[in-house]
Amino acid sequence: MQPIQYASSCKLPGNHNPLYTQRFGADPGMLVWDGRLYVYTTNDAVTYDAEGKPQENTYSNIRTINCISSADLVNWTDHGPIPVAGKDGAAVWASNSWAPCAAHKNIGGVDRFFLYFCNGGNGVSVLTADSPAGPWRDPLGHGLITRDVPNCANVLWLFDPAVFVDNDGTGYLFFGGGVPQGMQADPGTIRCVQLGEDMISLACEPKTVHAPYVFEDSGINRIGDTYYYTYCSNFTTGGNDMGITNGAIQYMTADHPMGPYTWRGEFFRNPEVFFGLGGNNHHSLITFKGEHYLAYHARTLETPLGITGNYRSPHLNKLIVNGDGTLGMITGDMQGVPQVEPFCPYGVIPAATMARQGGIEVTGHDESVQLCAKEGSWVQLEGVAFDKGAARFTIRAASEKGGSVILTADRQDAAPLCVAQVPAGEAADITVAMESLTGTHDLYLTFTGDVTADWWQIAAE
Image 1 (cartoon, rainbow, N blue to C red):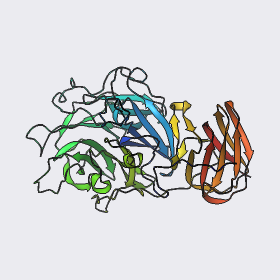
Image 2: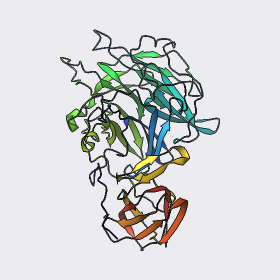
Image 3: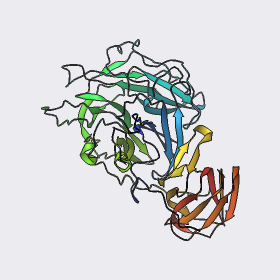
Image 4: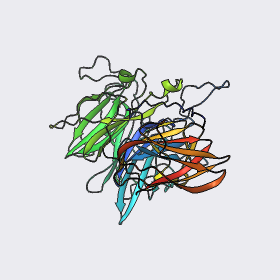
């Protein structure tokens, strides 16, 4: 066998940020369901000039939303880009799909999922599904929040939705942004509204939220009995006596989701402070398996790819909630968060599941997601617990000219646990015996030849 030339990775060993590197992804919104954290991001689409050089991100070509999920916050399953806007999307009438957020609600005994997004800067729309990964459908055929909605016509940027379902099942939506001339300290461009029981209608007229030096990027959460409204400050904060800095995440608190809210402080500076490249600062908060987390985007994938243009990637760090309910300052980093539980290899594992990768692409969506590998491509899974041992490896894969999948533990170049030969032809289930393995290990799948894979599974001894 010729030595394998392993594809390079944009993510260093031990780093858990950014969450994935096979695509860009901005404006992360989060949803917890059935023991997994789902993260939805704007699918930043790289645009190129006539000479093939990357151009500045104009956001005008974004019509899909990324969806990934994880049970351990380290190994992420890529559910593929969701087709949202345009002729191939669920909302064929929409032009763009920015800044997603998602919610779950049980309605009439049925679990329903809702994906809110903005069609550019002039409205908020909603899709529905029976699963957090889709498929998604358009229940309205038009926007949910438009400039025809009362108290919305004068919102400069009618976008950046944040959704929240309270303990009693009532849903709330926050949105808006922009800084009118001369109103930097109190732009007055954020709105909140109670949603109807169906989550796709409005129960009242949207109400103005007065957030100091607001720019965009609403968030709404409940921690204990306190409601937290969070947002990104604008870039004209100089001279204020509150300690608000440019493009930083602020928080306000209230006793009711509709307010009134009181400003409490700043807890996350602009990513430029931590990573050297700045821009807008978009975040969301979530509580998952007893811990609080902050998701945000940063331009950390641009540098290893050798491009610039305001293309963003999702990060995750712990949120500091003090005993008195105040939020502590968070430092953005590449290490991210620790693995919260071991990874179980015994179920059917979607092939597009990874902590790190090199040379991998992911195509499709819903039930058609595939991992696409070339010679030397690989994926790494961290902290895989072989509590029951290992006897057989099965993978559903295909290759036009034939290839293979090499399984190793702890190192890519370790002695193979097994090699699954993928014959030329259509997709097939390939099962091979593998070396016995116990304990917890990192697991590598390395590919030779061009291979597409749907899923894999390890059988216990």
